[in-house]
Amino acid sequence: MKYSHYLVPLCLLFSTYCYSQHYQIEDKYLGDPLFRKIDMNKLEKDCTYPPNYWQLSDSKREEIDKLCPLNNLKFDFQGLYKFIYKEPVIIYNGQDFQLTLSMSEDNEDNDIESGVTIFGGGISLSIVKDNIVKDQVYLANNSIYLSDFGVAYQRYFISPQGEIYTLYLIEVEEGIFPMFWKHYKIDNKKMKFVLQDMLLNVTDGELYQIIYPNQFNVILNKPVTKIDHKKLKSCEDKYDTEQYYSCYIDVYNHYNSRLKQKINLLNKNNNTIKKSYLKLQQKMASSCLELPPPVSGNRGETDPYLSKVMFCLIQNYKQEITNIEKQLAH
Image (tube, rainbow, N blue to C red; front, side):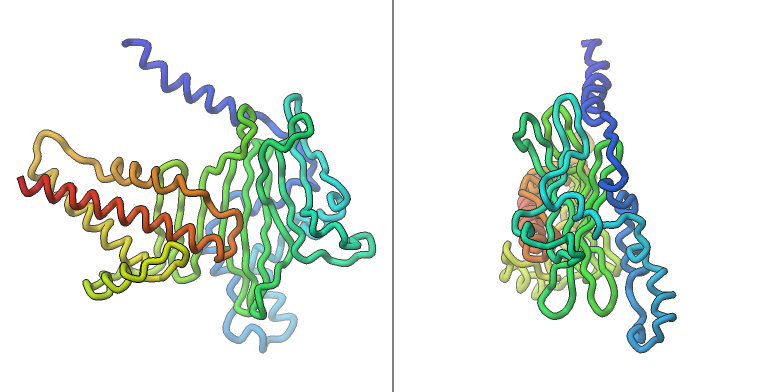
């Protein structure tokens, strides 16, 4: 039994080793370090235009633009396409595998050498061994038009430690809005990009933080509102796992709060075994976060994902509340 004290440090040592490799990559491929750590709320605030922005002079608008870090990136994302548009480029050549940057095949006909800007050019990062792609992650693209109201694009950064960060943005008349941030690590043993955490902004004062494998957090920029029974039932009745509604957060908060209350009541009545809300919540989140995450920040992907995860959590909360109520009844 005394050897068990060393098992956790030993496991952590081997786990760290899998992610500890140093990757020497030329600066022209790395992306911008701004995306390594994102404060979504601050970035959105700094990049939102004042109401009279379009009535201001060019010089005044330039002053406002400088306040947004997204307008002051040092990395040339447009120029990146000139390095990779003909064929995949090896940006790291290791003993066991390579990292390559490549562009979507549907952009091969763009005449970059004439100076024409590519729109919608997707860029991917791949782990390649013996000319076989072992895993791939979507890194960036140029402006993709969103109907008539704006454009969307994605940016990235690759750290020397083998960590990859991506940020999906939407640019409209009101400013530039960060929508979807992802953080991966390279597992050089399994040759996989392992998703570590995500931030999803649904543009109505709610930010969702997901830390794998078992944390689902809601960060609100507004006070939590208590939902009445009628509205609760109405929202639950229209629950659609393919569409996200703003009232879902009220339903989630309602059952999350009820679960906490029931656990506290159970622990008061039971002096021997204490139930941990945190451990229980993480256990339930772990099963719900097994759902495949969105590839891009397009609302057509993020809305169904959020809806499915929240539906899963709410169903788990309701079942646990029922179980605790049965225990309290005895």
